[in-house]
Length: 361
Image (cartoon, rainbow, N blue to C red; front, side, top):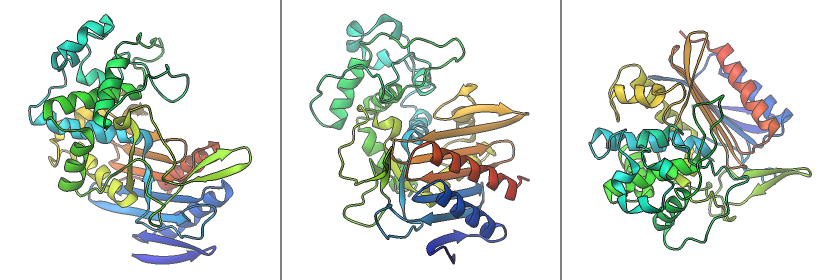
């Protein structure tokens, strides 16, 4: 690991070659577009070409960025949820065609009839017509009681009593956070364990990915702060601020370190390259390519004959982007701790620069 100092900022990086060009460019973008902290990686199945971070934890602090910093994934959590569910499909606990109401027949009488045939793969690919629950113009929620799992179950019952979302003729799917809550409820039913416990068991105990839930802890230790973007500027958000994503945590409530997320992406690259690891290679193919447009936790698009799996996520205070070039067999990851138009431009420009510096083999 090599240490650089640029503009009084600490920059940590693995690898060499074009890395100084990439770091300098990332730091310039971070400054120009008012991003407090930016972390990025470029990986192939068996190598890390770039892994670096620049900036500081929050605009009001002097804490310098480092590779142990955590970022909230927002909707990039969906791919991890689908990833763990796929493991239990391989174990025979579920199938992709398992119908929701085969597991919850007692819920059927209070559900909208159009939902009676929805399946696990329909939920994970946003093809079940479930209301989106994206944080804007959501139906008002009742007050649910109990622990997280009990509240999620009650939320699921409520969601299935709502009219289906109207399909857009231009898209075969309706992006839904609530649909991922329902998929997680199916997993909880067949395992007898909560989504949280299953994610910890698989991602932490087995794969050593070190995931956490909700915002990164920044009150008891030095770590990243998300930032709200307002007309008056950025506002740092302490981790103990009340935060609710409408009981759809399986759709968007995991935090992780860049270097661990990069290892998770490498598992996907290896699987897409034909290697069995946590999942079978055929399962990775299904997760990424089951449907065009949106597969299982990943947008699946084709451009000029090349296949791409991509996703971005935000809770309004962080922004995470991951893009896998399945044809050229490499992936790009960028994390920042603010979400606004400037941040998304900075992420897009850095990704473009990495592609230029490291043309795929």
